[in-house]
Length: 303
Image (cartoon, rainbow, N blue to C red; front, side):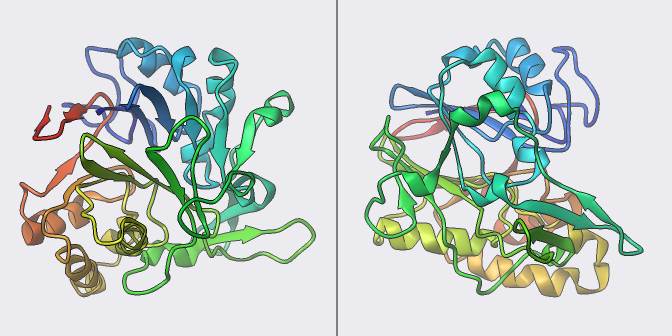
């Protein structure tokens, strides 16, 4: 398996802005994955920056077999129109509530900011709600048509650590009131490759520990070898008084998986990441940025 970070809040080596490869940093996430003969796009970032970064990293988006959008926020699905312009065939898998419902973030003072991503009308035929796929193994677990080694997972438990920032996030079904978002539109992707199980998260609004618990149940005791994506701990960074108390709950959940390697960034936050590295060990949790890439084989990983 090969994994390349196309979009992230920072660029490899320099933080925000551009590097010598002219990679663009954006608040968002997009991962390019080669696995079992397939080319997969997990999230698209917020805009057309995905096209620039893919070109700079010599990745041909027209060759993507399918895309997956993890949830209904612009920083993960805003690049869908740009992707559809350069790829004329790949299905885009997502939860129907990610684009049928409206999503909002509440800012200081109570004002609501729209957090939706917008899809061009002509591209709606490219969208494939996971509900339309055959369920595999159990309810809420779906398999894209092209692969038997990829599972799209919904329906996460709401126990243990839940990101504090969720309290500022809302959703609205058409014709109904605005309510706190329950993130029933959130998807994780689980891939089996080279004897390893790799779990991809977008923002882990449901709690990365809960997403791992759900994946573990599906794997029926088999290990989760890698977790790659955002953990949405950034709001904990702002709430310093409770930071360590809150994060210790998550640490306890993650240490239940001593063999798992974590690769994270985007919405995780610098200070929470440092806390996790201190508790879990820097050899177990790593930082991703636009341009970072690594490979997973049956026996090792290489950067």
